Image (cartoon, rainbow, N blue to C red):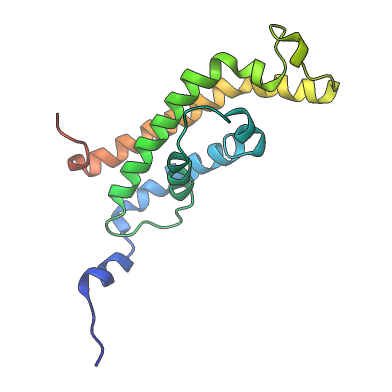
Length: 157
């Protein structure tokens, strides 16, 4: 005899009403994977107070290809982690980005000597704040969409 558990079956259903979140998630994926999920980035954030759980949740969010019934709580938690990630990067990395990339005149003994690497890293230092702003704007857009559809996700204070 086959026993069907309705709550498990419901989780398998794709939530068509939440499919509107996917375009924003895809744009977040593009920005995150292109600029924040790179080896060089992992090296320069080493030692910063960013929890591995935060990175894992962001990766799970950007990996979504479909949204199932009940995923809205996970998406909300991932948006909170994305916001925390952006805040920590803005607070702890941006002020020392050039030093960590090895392109700051303030730390001449750590300057990258290879001319090509120096130019590439200067370019990264120049474009990084813009890419962080893009990630933050997309995070706000997803959060706004999510809370307009599910206002009960926002804790009441």
